Image 1 (cartoon, one colour):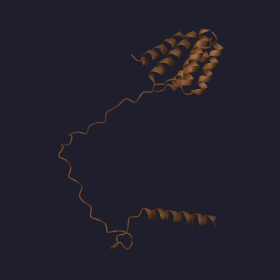
Image 2: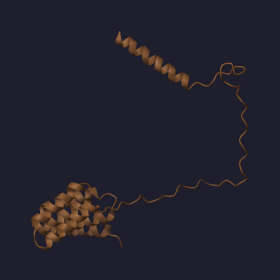
Image 3: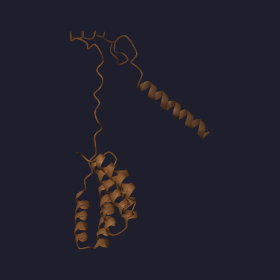
Image 4: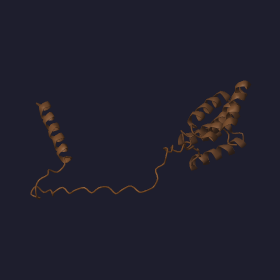
Length: 178
């Protein structure tokens, strides 16, 4: 019974929608509330401008490049972490950068700063992972990508993987603005 009532309600709804979009009936006079259809006028003649001989291809624009920046709060925390690094308090600087990361988890610049901090603290393997994460997040920003590759190169060099570090440095140079 509920199925039949649901089908009837749906049918009534669809019929109502069809009536709303139906054109007005052509009746004489305005007895039904509609006026007589008026004749349509012909569109104006096209201007005498010459038509191009070949279609013009759309201009190929380079996709807009992203440019990551630090927000005010994350920027203040990064500055505080740099001050803590100068006093060789690497553990506290890492904690400060992790707070910045909690504010802007998708900003590759924060990941790069935290990776750089890990290199200073003697954790190049963690720095390598943070560089890869930053590289992933830096899509569309060549400057951030170059910085991520520099971090990766530094972490590889700290691990004694000099050939891989050289290749990463080459990628960083190729992305750096000239």
